[in-house]
Length: 120
Image 1: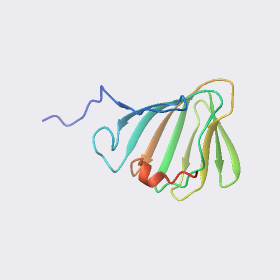
Image 2: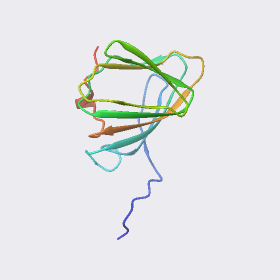
Image 3: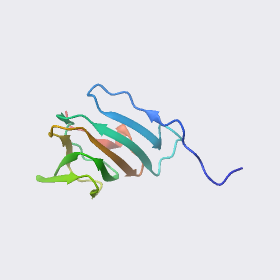
Image 4: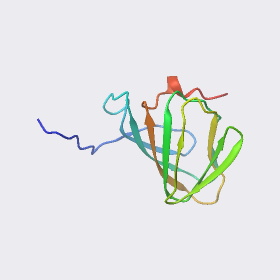
């Protein structure tokens, strides 16, 4: 048995808002509830509802920009920057800019629709 796992086939999450989500490790790929790592692309003009997740979320911007509304404060990250949003924090993610945003998202424990608590 090898002492590593090579991920060649991430789980691509079906979306209806044009966002690309490829989970490399996490509940959908290997059943790991401790961490999820996803490669994401948010199209220009994309946004999602506010949420108050039960996990810490780390975001690293590869290309473009991403906007965060964190407890009412607007934070904009650009390529090469990163942020950690603590679990239990009300946050909204969006890309109100004119170019696609490519980034990595790491959640601890792993992302789950049951623990993200998105608002309607």
